[in-house]
Amino acid sequence: MINKLERKFGRYAIKGLMKYIVLLYGLGLIMFFVSPQFYYNWLALDIEKTFLHFQLWRLITFLIQPIEQNNIFFVLITMYLYYFIGNMLEMKWGSFRFNLFYFSGVLFNILMCVVVYLFMLIVYGTGISVPVSLEYINLAMLFAFAVEFGDVQMLLFFVIPIKVKYLGMFVAAMYGYAFISVFIKENFMSFLYLFIPFVIGIMNFLIFWFVTRKARRAHKRTVADMRRRYMYMQGVRTGEREGTVVNQAAGRKVITRHRCAVCGRTELDDDMLEFRFCSKCEGNYEYCMDHLYTHTHVVREKTGSGSVDEKSE
Image (cartoon, rainbow, N blue to C red; front, side, top):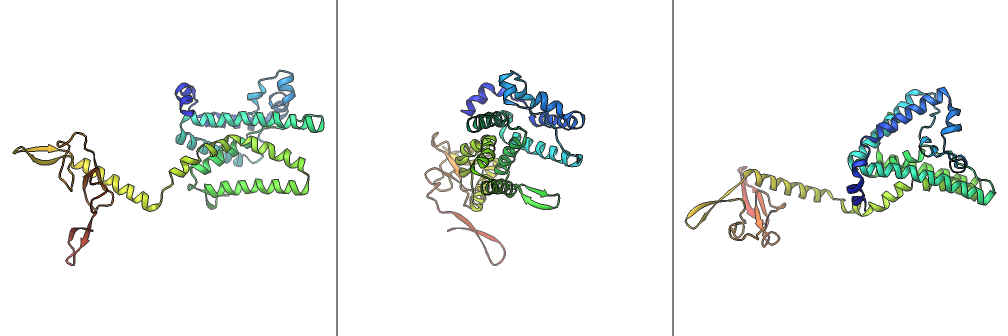
């Protein structure tokens, strides 16, 4: 389904989306020093004002939020971190899929605000509009980055080297601890009030995790599998570099590209023949499909004099 959407709407994708998101961060930083109340009065996502007073621009402008940080250095590092994460995901998925992931996160956060408002309205009789920020959108992006680039190392607190997948687990554990603490110290309604925004806010990551689980499982490779694949590709490239094979046919020399190391057949014997290199044979050995899985693998045995002789095992 995503492939169909990409073919139809891919040309509308915003390339380099994260640089525009970082600009929103910059506007939020300026707004914090100039007039943060202007944001809350006119730009923040307030359900009543948005849908009852028809201030629909709030569905977009809530992304420009004041960054209440006095430490400018910390803000700049945060901006760079999410710029780096977003660009890496866009390089991995392509512009359209990253756009889809990010903007679905925006939609799910709007949905979260609506759900919580209706929940509070039904339970307590008064709807409360939860302040929506980039927190859950960035959190979903961090989790997706931890899944896609789990072995990439980062410096925690600029000192401690840690793999991204462990960082993602640590952040998830922190949120889990917060949920358990609220559930124990407060009440079930407070737990739901905290848990519902979290789940809906990172719904785009949960969908991504569910959709790609089979692909992730299929791409897992053991070290031996990867080594065999590497040796096979090396054999293919070696054969392509060596180019042609000289064979005798009808009393004359004929140039062919393939020759089975067992039966000696080439592509001239049958147009339907297919040839493959064996990843387990040591050397440049090519086989037809009849003998690819039935031949005896060739290994090299070192002799006492230091020379190398080939033998079949």
